Amino acid sequence: MKHRVSEFLAGLIFGLGLILSGMTDPSKVLGFLDPFGLWDPSLMFVMAGAVCIGFFGFSIAKKRTLNFLGGNLSFPGAKQIDKPLVIGAILFGAGWGLAGFCPGPAIVSLAAGQIKAAVFVVFMLIGMWMFSKVTR
Image (cartoon, rainbow, N blue to C red; front, side):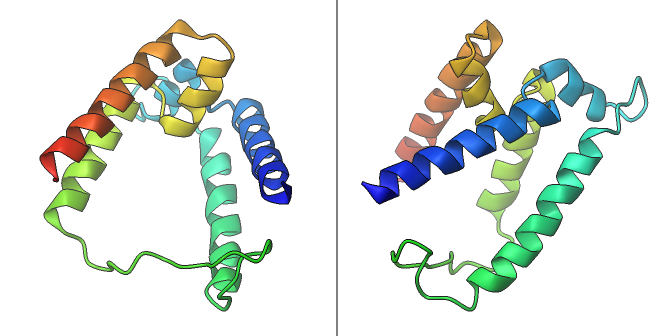
């Protein structure tokens, strides 16, 4: 039960952070991704904050074998940049640039009833399903 409560609280804090930072507003995200147009640099602060927290968080986590709730803590073993990673990054970036959503903010926006987010999430799920079929 404590795992479910902590998962809910972590998701709630993450979702609130996405809303407060403007990541759930596709026009704000697209403005950030348009450096030669009406560029909106405000999301750079969100990104810098995430990188700083991630840097210190992973520095601590790498020294541990258990998470804070007692579960096993492991990291992916792959360390090389390969073709699937590059293709995935290109597809992710293209989807983000076209729609103004990435997966986390899209799910938060879907819960808020945004139709654009619903379309994005449907196609994201189709893409995940296609990936699982291709890589089998």
